[in-house]
Amino acid sequence: MPTFAAEACSLSIEGFSLAYGGKPALRDLTLQIPRHRVTAFIGPSGCGKSTLLRAINRLHDLNESARAEGRIALEGRDIHDPKLDVSELRRRVGMVFQTPNPFPMSIYENVAFGLRLQKRLPKRQRDDRIEWALSAAALWDEVKDRLHRSAWQLSGGQQQRLVIARTLAVEPEVLLLDEPASALDPISTLKIEELIRNLKSQLTLILVTHNMQQAARVSDYTAFLQQGALVEYGSTDQVFTNPRLQRTEDYITGRLS
Image (cartoon, rainbow, N blue to C red):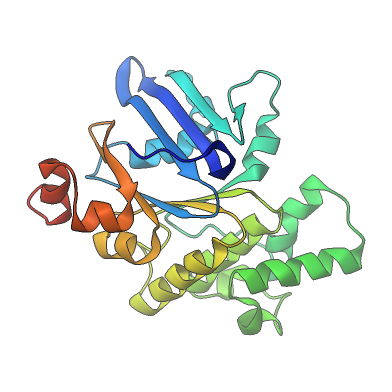
């Protein structure tokens, strides 16, 4: 497994296992996620990709049967530290799901929602932050003249970029993306992929995808999971063109599903 200098690492996962009701979902995972890069999690359905993504901002806390072992550290601090504010963790580690989930309110209020919860800003500062977030999500030019219309009037691809803008507005350090383009048309998918590439200058991104071509196009590093375990992890170029293990090659080439 590749290692990265501590100062270049955003997340460190060490011997992490997770079980639901005694049934293992993740098995002794160890990997480092480099800062300001895109890391893709790939693998067959049920291999643990999305489970690991959710574990990074502690969504498994919502399941009483979940039991975790090992360590996940964000910038050196264990995310399971009892003194850690989980709400603050989820601000620092934002998450975007497969299906766009804009709130039933205006475009403006969707992006302002997290800001109003996190801090009180003067209206001018709030407006500037909302414009910045929508611009960072490549949506500003499309919606600037209808900010006070319902977010539900947007197309699916626009709604997904709005959700990303809503997440960016509170200035996370890490953005988790769980198949963010799987429900979108090809044009919207390309916009999301371009957005992912552009955002890595500002934050660390982790992408779960079933689309091998998408992982190859947008990610810098790729982790291949199978049955809850990490099979191979390395630079995307290495994993896709010169995998160390036959299992990895079989999955990437479609011989293993």
